[in-house]
Image (cartoon, rainbow, N blue to C red; front, side):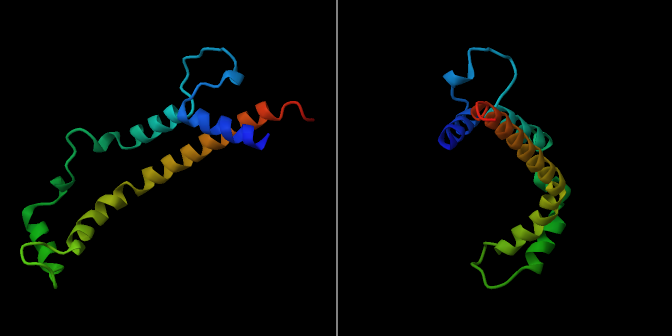
Length: 124
């Protein structure tokens, strides 16, 4: 029974056909397609013509390079420059990412409950 649950759960997320599920053809998304849709909608505003450097001008980038100058190869800025410039951008998407992870967790939990009911329906 546990193996059946694990196989059905894995196959549902992967989108594989499950003959035990029946022949009902629905137009609703299931499994991995729903999760993929959640992640696509999360970062929709960051695709297309989004440029991470549009919030910085050349002077701010040069200041970050000077501020984080150290023992590095000449002509190559330190990795700390990249971290300093990316930190505000990553902080901007922190909230939406956590909401998306929570939604995916809720979906997976509901999916697991549906599969458990289907696999263990014969036991009182």
